Image (cartoon, rainbow, N blue to C red; front, side, top):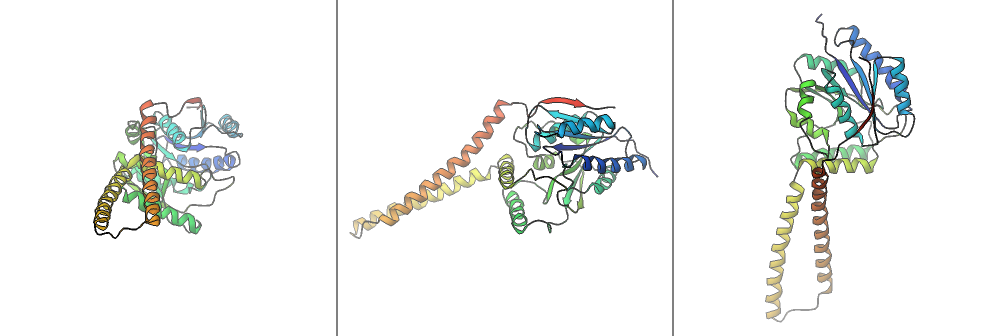
Length: 319
């Protein structure tokens, strides 16, 4: 059997995850121990928990795990910066310490057992391995439908994205070095990682129910996340506004000509209904257009300021 000495860091973003951390750490330790014993990874491999400004005992538990076992490391951000920034912080920290990084959520919905397949794909020459859900049977009809619409809309708008892939993936050190060159503040890692290139593959898995606690992505956050993804990778919405505006302009010109002709023929009557419909339609169109343009201007504003995506408060690690 071939022996490997690659250092693996499993990066786990955490926000108020005190209810699941003990079980998550237990299962991850079992998996990492198996991989080390099978000589698939180095015994210097670690599980890196990233505390994204939690308000419960998440960081205290991470410190306890670290003190009790060298396998566990911890990264504490100075304040809550959101899942994508916390994940990036962990990956950029792991970049300098590991040969391979695997990102996954703390809620145990991602199947830990496919980590072996991730590592095998890496040893076959893949720099990026995407974890993709094999089905959405456990989702509600609403969530299944909206997810399908999201992926179709993203592709329609020209965004290169993998269906049913969240942030469960393996990334090699070389790919992380490439990822570090992307400097945008508005993060949508599912799209950014796909832009890296390099050899990649897919591993399918069955997603489980959350082990404990509440979902950190309610509908409101999911919609905001989806909109961020669209506006971060496509200018088609703003082009669509231009096209619609041009079409409305043509219709308006035609209606003006029609009104002049009818006036010359003496067929005009006071049309309150048509006037009101026109006013409401054009007003709504203008407000929608301003809103879309405003979203892009807002993103430009945050990018130009170039504020740090995260600030690290503490890093505990035993090498």
